[in-house]
Every structure is written in C-alpha cells, then in structure tokens.
Length: 180
Image 1 (cartoon, rainbow, N blue to C red):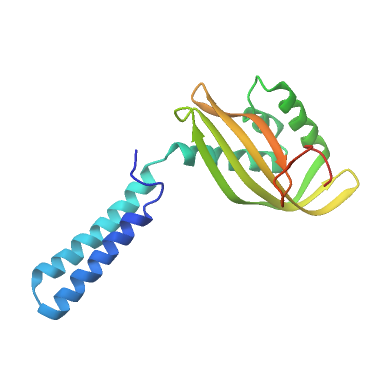
Image 2: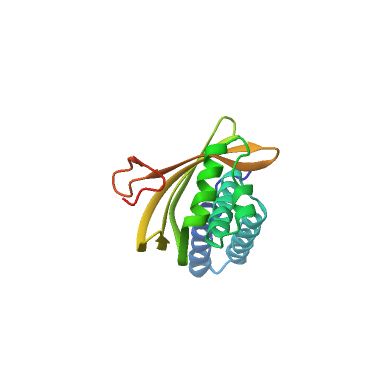
C-alpha cells in the first residue's frame, strides 16, 4: 500500500528540497547541490510513476462508481445490473425500472465524490453528486441529484448493496424516483 492516496505530497516535498538545493547551488556554486536538485527531480518523476502503478481500494471503488454511471447513462442494462449485488433484489428492480423510465440527455457530471472504507476494507460508502439533463416521464430538464451508495466486496468485485437518494441541499433521504 502506498503512503498517501496521491503522489502530490511527496512531489511537493521533493520540489521544496530541489528549490533549496538550487538556491544553495546558486549561492555557493558547488556541484553537490546540483546533484541534489537532479536527485529530487528524479524522485518526483519516480513518485509520479509509482502513483500511476498503485491502485488503492478507494480508487477501485470510485472507478466502479464511474463504470456504473456510464453504463446507466448508456442504458446498458446487463452491465449496469452487474454492478448491483445479486442479493439486493429490490435495488435491482428499482434500477431496471429507472433504466426504462429515465433517459440522460447529454453527459452526466459526477462531482463531490467521497469514499469511506470500513470493515477491513470490505465495505465502502460512496457519496457523490450527479448533475445533468434528464427525461423522466413528462419531466425534462437539468436536475441536480445527490446519492450515497453502499458497496460490498463479493468474490473479488465491488457490488452495490444499497442506494440512497439524498436531498442536494439538506442531505435528507428522498424517495428514489421522486421529482423533488
């Protein structure tokens, strides 16, 4: 496991050290300080490459969230339902109904993604906002939504076991298909 979720903190530390080494070189003109700058630049590149190659549990869950949203937006029923737990019959039925009734017009924008892991990284809760234009029955227009999904790791894959639609402002739970 990597020391941070992102490579930015170690890259910032290396860039500060590289700047200090450069200032020391400028003041003293000693080759050891330029060597320090070169080492720090190589470490920054190394941290960046390392970050690209390490995928954390949180990143896996968030990637599955985007996969689920894209499959729903493209009305790929089998792919969408593959993200839902086979044990969550009510949720699977609700998703199937939503696939038939809701059409996303244009791109669905996902923002404010927050993922919390618990139970030794076997359960995750993802909170996010989905904004875009949609058609639902006779209602058509832009409508912001806020969601909380509970994921559970099953057979090496993350599956949604619970979905809650929240009021975009207050955070109170709403009925999934309500027009509020």
